[in-house]
Length: 421
Image 1 (cartoon, rainbow, N blue to C red):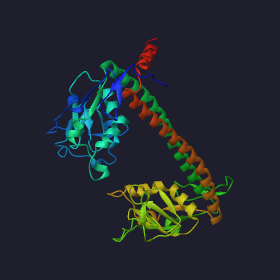
Image 2: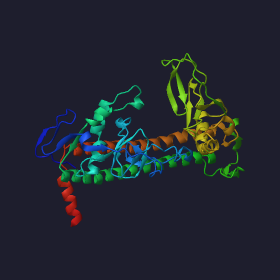
Image 3: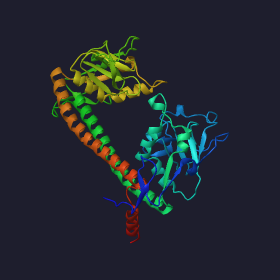
Image 4: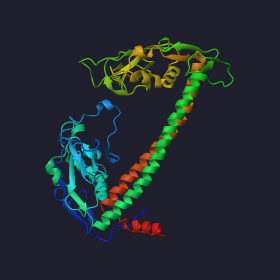
C-alpha cells in the first residue's frame, strides 16, 4: 500500500525532523504538557503500572507475588490518570513512555504529564512520542555513564519539539495507526503462536524419541515411573547421577582476562572469555537459576560461572544425554520452584530417573533428533524473520504518518465510507 505526500511542506527547524506539512505546528514539550504532582499519600490509587517498549503503559504483572510492594512501601509513588503521558527518562532509548489508558501508580523515577491543550488527540501523541523517529532523537540527548541508566535531562525534555497537525489530521492519523498496527500486531501474534507450537512439537518429538526409541514395533515394558510410562524392554532406568554428575560453577579469579581463549559459560550460555579452563568437553551446562531447564553441550575447554551447573562425568553419548535432559527439563524447573529462592543444586537433580538405551541406539536417536530439530529450527527462523519484517514495517509506518511524510487522511476517509456503506 502506498500513500501520497501532503500538498506542501515547510522546514520544521530541526534537522532530524526535516520538512513537515505546511499547516502543521511545532511547539516545545513544556508548552504541550503539564507535569502532574499527584503522589500516593495514603490510599493506594489503582494497580502498579509499567512501561513496555512495544505496548506502552500497561498493568504490571508479577511473576512472583512476593515482589509486590505493600501499601506502606507505595507512599510517594506517582499517581497516573487515564490520558496522561507517562515518561521514564532512563528508558527513552527503549520507547519508555506512552499515554496511559489506565489509572494506577508508577515508580517515583517516572513522571506523569497532563495535556496543556485539550484539543490534542491522545492517541496521536501516543504514537508520535513512541515513534522510531522520536526514540532515535531521544537517544541523541541521553547522558550518563552506564548504558542501562542513560537519562535525558529535564531541560532537554522541556525543550523537545512536539509536532502538532491540525486536530482533524491528528484524529485521522491516530485512527489509521490504531487500525493498521492492530492488523500488524495480529499477524505478529500468529507468527509467535506458530513459533510456540514449533517449540512444543520439537519437545514432544524429543521426549518421545528418548523415552520410546525409534522403532514403533519394539516390545515395551512398564518403567515403573508414572510420568514415563512404558519404555523398550531392553532399555534400563537409571538415576541421572549414573549418566551425568553435575557440579556447581566457580567464581572468576581476580586475575581473569577478557581477551582469553576459553569461553566463560553462565546460566544462559557464553558471556565472555578467560585464559583458564576448569571444565572440558564434552560437557553439559545448565542454569541454576533463571535459565533452569536449558542445556548446552560444550565440546572444548570452558570456565563455568557459579550461576551454572556443569557435568564432570558423562556415561553415554553426549548428544543423547543432552536431549534426554531436555525431555525432563520440567523436572529441573519443578525442583527449582521448591526453594525459597528459586534455583537448583546437584543434589536436587541427581536422583531424577532417565530411560537409557544401548549406546548404538543413543547415537541413532540423537542423530534423528538433530535432523528433525533442524527442520523445526528453520521453520522457527522463517517465522522470526517475518516478525522482524513486520516490526520494521510497523515502525516505519508510524514514523512516516506522525511526521507527515505520508498523508493517510484519504485512506481513513475511504475506510469510513466502506464502513458506512
